[in-house]
Image 1 (cartoon, rainbow, N blue to C red):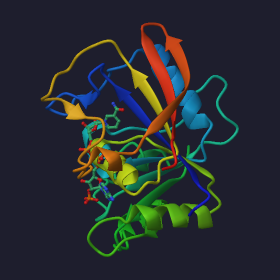
Image 2: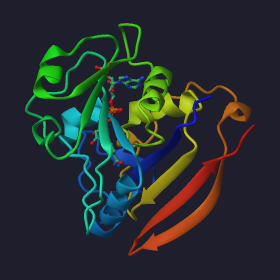
Image 3: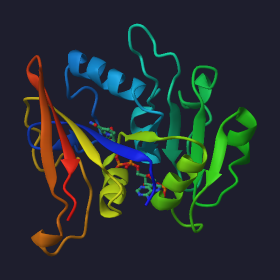
Image 4: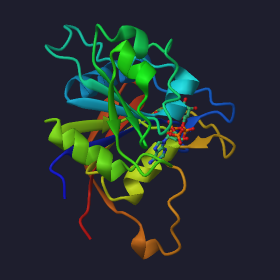
Length: 217
Ligand SMILES: NC(=O)c1ccc[n+]([C@@H]2O[C@H](COP(=O)([O-])OP(=O)(O)OC[C@H]3O[C@@H](n4cnc5c(N)ncnc54)[C@H](OP(=O)(O)O)[C@@H]3O)[C@@H](O)[C@H]2O)c1
């Protein structure tokens, strides 16, 4: 088991949705919650998202706290076939914070040439999240904040890699056609569901931040 501590951050509606059916997700939570989320980023060595999130939101993924952190977290994209656009904000802000393109084996020459690091962690088909975490550990990263989206969150939960959930919840309802915070887990038996223990609750205006740690089963 790796020593890298992994926190899954979710920013959802009351009914656990992270986006509308058309992918719109900005902004479900309040600006105060987002400021708190920047503090969370600043407290981690790395931020990780799936390439679906890069395509949908073009996020910068930096920690924009006041004052700024002494060191920006490394920004990692799980991107099996290096689809991250070279003009994505991540790629045009390499002077602000490092970027890692984690591929399933692709060399991602253009991203490397632009200044990103490329980690090959897969079998040619899809990034293996266990390999990704092992590589992060080898690179000296001790904490990773997984920021989604739905599919990447599901992969981390399925593999039992998440230690903690930081769940920001805003008081609105999006409905069943919205995108679920965690994608398919393939559960057929509730006994096999991962259980979580609540350890903290913060009220942030009308939003809430609930922290859970995994119950070892
Ligand atoms: N409210 C929030 O907190 C929040 C946060 C983040 C995102 N979002 C929203 O979520 C949506 C994106 O979520 P999404 O589920 O479509 O995409 P995602 O989870 O961000 O990315 C999924 C993609 O990541 C790549 N990937 C590589 N290895 C993977 C692995 N082992 N497991 C899973 N994915 C892997 C796959 O593409 P390849 O096969 O090409 O590598 C996959 O299609 C957007 O609408 C975004 O706005 C909301």
